[in-house]
Image 1 (tube, rainbow, N blue to C red):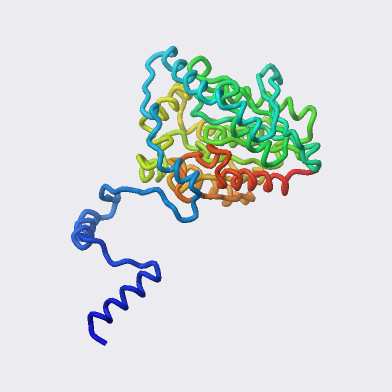
Image 2: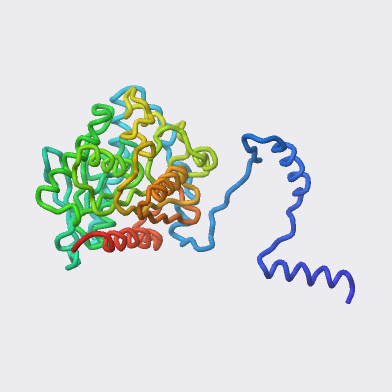
Length: 364
């Protein structure tokens, strides 16, 4: 056998194993990167392109991962009126799709109030018998500014449908009119009201992004106020450090096609909500709070999520505190994309996992 045929055979074997020859220019790139990173300290990487992943990712999710940045990612409202215009414009797009989503998911929604706070009670048309005495409280995401009224409901609809639970979604007050602590005051008021009619062992709290941070902050505040804690929580990709602190604020910047960067609307919303308070206050950044005696927790994120570090830092701190804590990380997903499309199999999987986690830890 000739050397040429042996080389070809070896290359074919490598390719069959999923291995590839070095790309053109790799040697030069490796040398320049080695030189750029020869000293201890910050790591420097070359500009690169991240194609949408295809392995283990559904076509529906691939489409979301490949989508361009949202047009508002760098929005910079200067006045309360400009903030409200942006918020209401985005809310209207969500609300327009809600009738079809409610029909698809088989849920009904009733607007009411609890402790003077507007809430929406989401009920599955075909409830699960074992959940008869169980109630979930939902605190929505949206950077503390987005998601007023019914526009906050998609996540609540998904868990009510896929889990067969009754969900109470809190329409808490938000900036620019109501900065911190209005949102947390409203969430706590609803939680205390629910405790008047339901045992804490039958209830869980969940929310994504801002809602994830508020879920964590709610437990911290309930501990401080000696209020009963939920039996389980699900803070999805929580904004647990509201400042730009955490590895993936850097490594996933410009890769996450949902949040994109803290330095856009996101950081501006953080400062608007904080209203001059220390961003390391545990009620703003719950990662700095005491996680001892927290209820069992399930967290969800994606490999391109700007908040991946927020999520893994929270998970690790919970584990170090001896708390039962699950962590689900999805291939390729940017921030909270597991909740964007009810038809994506990853969405059903994520919310079914949360529902099953609650089923294991809530009393019947």
